[in-house]
Image 1 (cartoon, rainbow, N blue to C red):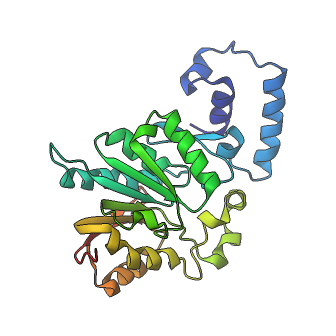
Image 2 (cartoon, helix red, strand yellow):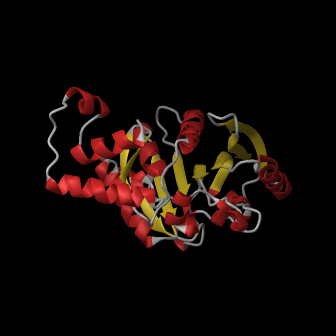
Length: 269
């Protein structure tokens, strides 16, 4: 669906097919005014998702605003990888326990709760505004009872310290600080806290990889999205930690290394 189709389908609350089948759909004055405003905002560089206040991810609808990073199609690969590995830790009488670090809009946690209904999902974020939106999205997709939300800066929340997980998943900020202002205009509308990965883009990988073993059962998995050309750097952090065995690196639709999977081999609990 192109952006014009997204805009009109969103305003008319209909599918792309309905746009073409129902050519007599009516645009009242309010809708026309919104379209005019939306076009101006889009020309200025604001993304169509923020303009409409929603997006689609894993076939589900998510509300988005400027407090959260807009879910990207590449992150669906992260969710699919977690689903793949969750089957390996589940059995008939057992549910995988999964932690989503830096949940943002909740797209990862909500999708996992939707497609892995027997799993126990926890999701945390440093931003209270993001958590409120993630909770809304959980309700929107009827999985509120399947996710525990927590306000925390990574693993700082004391309540987590007696908990261990089968999978920790994260799409952390990974853009090098110096590169943020050089990216496409749409990026300037997204929260910097969800983008800035420090000088080399790897700050959060260092923090997560060093702290995660305490919260992972031995033999469980840390699965993270990575940025362009970052696979070697993240692998090096894993290897230097001495706590993980790298299992695989999954490529995205453009054949770019996008998701890294590592097994915890040295639980510190």
